[in-house]
Image 1 (cartoon, rainbow, N blue to C red):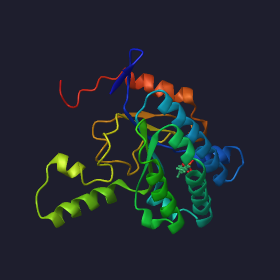
Image 2 (image 1 turned 45 degrees about the horizontal axis):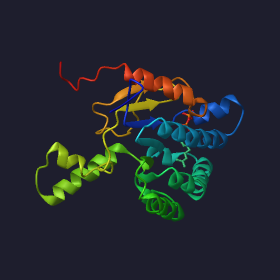
Image 3 (image 1 turned 30 degrees about the horizontal axis):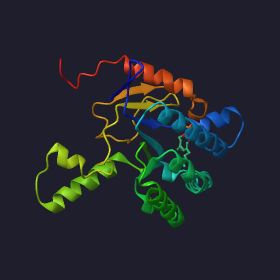
Length: 231
Ligand code: FPP
C-alpha cells in the first residue's frame, strides 16, 4: 500500500468491467457497441489510474464462461482484443508499463494468442506499472491447474508455494476490487487472491464509470481499516 497526499493508495486494483451490454441496450445499440465503448473507457481509466500512482491493475476482460456467448458477440470482442494489442502497445511502452495476460489463451483464436504473447514480450521491460488482462480466465480452473502441478510434484505445499503456482504468481494480491454494473458477486475472478481484498461495487455500467468514479472508489478504500482477521 502506498501513501500520496495523505491518502492511502491501493498498490493493486482489480476491476470487473461489467455492464457493457446493458449500457448499449439502454442506448438501443448492439452489445458490440457497448464493448467498444468499454474498451475506450478501459484505456483512459488505466492511464488515469497509473498516473495516480496505482502500480498494478488487473482487468477481467473475458471469463471462460463468457466464451459460451453468441459467436457474433465473441467475434466482436475478439476484434477489440486484436485492435487493442495492435494499437495500444506503443502507449504502454511510452508509459513504461508491462503487459501481462492471464487465462487459458488456447481457447482463443491463434492470432490473438500470438498478439497477446507479443504484447507481453514487447512491454516486458516496463517498470512503472503492470497491466494484467484476464482473458478466457476462470479462477477455479487456475486453482485446479495449480493443485495439479502440486500433485504432479508429489509434495504438500505451503500457502506461499501454492500462490507461486497460480497464473498471478508474480503479482501482489489485489488491495481493492472494483466491480461496475450493479451486480454484487465475484463471478469466478481471482478467488484465491481476493481473500483479504477490499470490495467496492458501483451501480454504474462500465462505459459510464468515469475517472472521478474511480477516485471515489480510491477514497472509499482509503477510509477502510484492514485488519486481515486480527483485532
Ligand atoms: C461484461 O459486460 C464485459 C465483458 C464480457 C467484456 C469486457 C471487455 C471490454 C471492456 C473490452 C476489453 C478489451 C480488451 C482489449 C481487454 P457484459 O457484456 O456482461 O454486460 P451486461 O452484464 O450488461 O450484459
